[in-house]
View 1 (cartoon, rainbow, N blue to C red):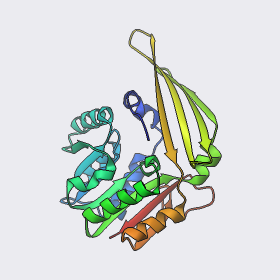
View 2 (cartoon, rainbow, N blue to C red):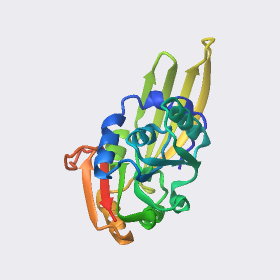
View 3 (cartoon, helix red, strand yellow):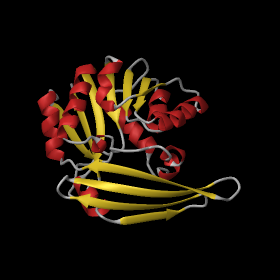
View 4 (cartoon, helix red, strand yellow):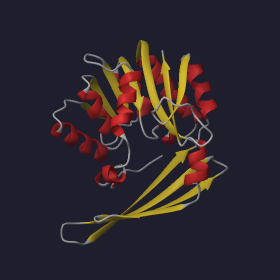
Length: 245
C-alpha cells in the first residue's frame, strides 16, 4: 500500500544512489533484452529502468498506479528520445497488456503487495502473459532489511532543496513496516512547502516467494544479491529473482 501524491517531485533525488545502470545491465543480460523484444516494466515509477531498457532496443511498456510518477517518467523518456508506452495501472492487472518476452519489477514493487494472495495473483498474471521461454526479473527488500535496518527506526536527510524525516514502525502481527515520511521542499523563492506520505511494505521471505513462483508454473528460479551474480546472504538487503517460463 502506498501513496505517491507528492513524492514524484523528489523521487529521483531520493534515489540518486541507486545503481540503475548496473541494475538495467543485469536485467538486459538475464532477460535477453534486445531490439524487437517486448518487455513490461511493472511498478515503473519515474521510468529510470524503462528508459534504459528502451535504449537497449526493447519495446517497453511502463506501468504504474501513480499518475504523478508516470508524468515524470514520460518527461524523462521524451528528454532521452525514447518512445515508451506508459500505462496507469495496478501491476496486479498486468494481464491487460498482452504477451511479453520479459517482465521486470524493480525496487520493492512486490513488497507493496498486501498479502501473499496478491503476490500470487501478480505472479500468475506475469506467467500467463510471458511467452514460452520468457523471463521475469524482480526484487524484494529482504526480511533482514525491513526488520533489522528499516524496522522501527527514524531516518532523515538534509539536502539543499529538500529535507525529509522518515519514521518507521514494524508491525509483527501483520509482518509489515509502516512508513511515515514528512518532506520540506524549497521553492524558487526559498520558501519550504511541506507534504506527507504514508507507505506500508510487507515482509516476504525468500523461500515463500520461491514457493509461490513454483505454484504458478515457474521452474527455473534463481536468486541473487541485489542485481549481482553473487548469492543471497544472511545480510542481503535486496534479493533479486530471475525465473523463466
